[in-house]
Length: 504
Image (cartoon, rainbow, N blue to C red):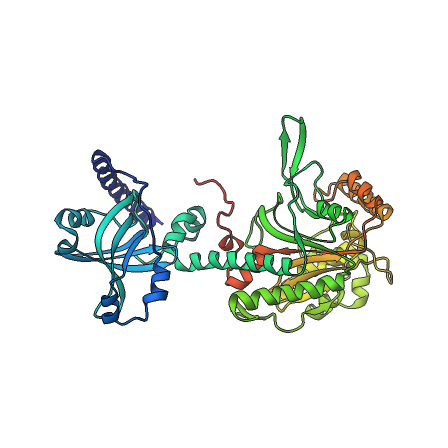
C-alpha cells in the first residue's frame, strides 16, 4: 500500500513537470501569434487513402504523385537527426509521416522536433511507400493546430485503469483501440435497429422526457421542479403510456429509441440513465411481438457482427436458433430442480425460502410476486441461451392484458440472454376499466411503501376510453444488447459517459 502511494505521488510530480513544460511551449506559440488556428482545411482521411492506394506498388504510387492534406493526433514520434518519423491518427485510422529538413526546411523541421505526443497537427505532402511497403506520407508542410497540454498514457500501452477510462472517456478513446471499436459498433447497432424498424413500417416518434406523472414501468423516478408551471415533474422512467396514446390517435406502428431515467442502484447491469427502444403495433399479440423481437435481434447481430452466434464472456450465445419459451415456474423447476410443484404452490414456503435466500418480500405482495421473486433468485442467471419467459402474474404486470384462458396471468414475456433481462413485452391492456382497477391496486401498493409502484394516470385512462385497438408492445434494452454484441462485461463499458460517484 505504501509503495502504491509513493508511486502515485511520483507519477503526479512527473505529470506536473510535463504539463509545466508544455504550458511553456504553448506560451511561446501564443507569442508567435498563430496559436490555435482555424484555417486548416483537411481534404483526406487515412482510411480512404489506404483503401484507394494501399495495394498500389511503390513505383506506380511514386509515378502518380498523389498530394494529400491530412490532419490528426500525433501518437508516436521518432526523431533521428535530419529525418524523423511520426504516427498520426484520425477518425479512420493511422498513417506514418516521414519528415526531413531537406523536404520541410530547417525551421519547420525544428518546429516538428519540439512537438509533443498528443498534439493535433495538419500536414501537406505526398504519398509513398517505404522499403517495407508501408503506405506513408512524405511531409512538405506541417502545422500545429491544437496543443496537448496534458500527457497521454504511456506510448501505445493503452489506458489500463478502468475507473479512469469511465471518468475520462476522452482519454480512453484516444488510447484504447478496443474502446473506440466498441462505440463505433454501438453506433452501427443502433443505426441497424432503426433501419429495421423503418423497413417494417414503424414510424419513429419522440415523446416527453419530463412527465407530470411517471408511468410505464415499476421504478423509482427522479423528481425535479418546473418553476414557471410551479409543479413537480419526473424524468421519464419509460415512454410507454405516451406511445400508446399515439396508437389511440391512429399511428398504428410506432417506435422510440429513447433515454430513460430510474433512481435505482448502480452495478454492472444498471445505470441511472439508459437507452431503450419501445415499439407498438396494432393487431399484434405478445406472440407476434416475440417473433418480431427474435427476428430483429438476429438480423442486427448478423448484419453488424457477421454472425448470429456471438461469444460473450466465454459463453457461446446462439441467436440463430429459435428462442426457447417457458413460464417462470417452468424456468424455476428446470434450473432449480430441488423445488417441487407443491412447494411453489405454498405461499408460506415461498416466503420462508425467499427469507432464507436473503430476499424477503413485503407482507402485501401476493403469490404471483413471491414466485417471480424466487425466479429472480434461482433461475434468471441460468438462462444463458435466448429464452422468452412468458405468462407473468397479473399482480406484477399492471399494463399487460390478462390471459383469456387463465385470468391470473398476463400475455407477457421477458427475454433473457446471458442471464440478464434484455426485453420486456406484452399484449397491451386496452380495457379502461380493468386498467383503472390495476392502477388503483398500484396506488394501494405505493401507500404500503412500494416506492416503485405506478401512479394512477387519469389522462391515460381517458385516452383508453376513446379506444385502444388490440396492440402488442415491447421494450428492448439497447445497452444490454450492445454489451452482448461487443463482449462487454459491464454496462459502463458501452456507455460513453456512465454515472459515477464524484472524484475524491
